[in-house]
Length: 350
Image (cartoon, rainbow, N blue to C red; front, side, top):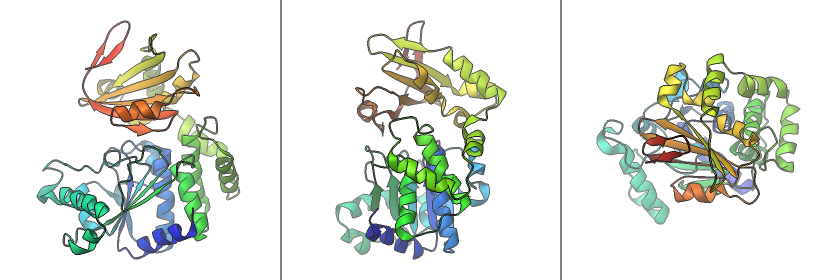
């Protein structure tokens, strides 16, 4: 990261009275780790901050120091209470849980809607940001991400597709401002890299990510303990549900895609939440005779699809973008309204 850009980011957050750190919906270790590591910088500089996540937090959020004590749960409160908003690992506003058209119940007075309308106008004409302020409703949005499909929705977009993860992006930011990374922040950053490289086994793994991991390990992080705590420890109910979902696998012979699904009734029956089985799609990468794998998660009329592939001739990001989603060539996803129809041969969204 260029030092000039890094210093611009630092100056912006240092001038803020409150910075809100936004996790994407259904946050994984990369979003959690990037936000938590950034919080360590704010804490060291005595800058007030809060986290925000539209969806429920996974159990692993506790490891990253994110809980009810430092969490904003209402997006109108988010907009009106802060000077700077930072999003982490979100490809677009919807993924960040920051909707252009929130319901009246979640946006009393239309505060959020007004802010995002103003943000769009300001992106088209930067002078508008100064000439038409909405009273105190004028936070500055910094967008940290590494997805090629990112829509550049921020006032400042820090998007580097060469990074394996958003945590790697934050690591380079810390290097540029010469911020000393302590053991706790090092663990947060390493967790994100482990998540997005699938433990240094997928195409996102680069010499840069390996070098970063080596440096973070020198800060006192235990790789084996981190993997066991965040990625390898599962409850019996989670394993039972994963087994049931794997038993539903269907293969589309025409397109060579293996598909399975999990519903909100499933997770309730096992007393779980979707976040506890969020990485299940990575298990499907072990399937060797398919071009791609997909897991459909059905909740309240909304279907979220997570896709993975190990093939060099398949680009899942294109498919995801056609359906309003995004991601990487080897890992992508989308969300649509609909219901599932399942028979012995196929799974269909209607």
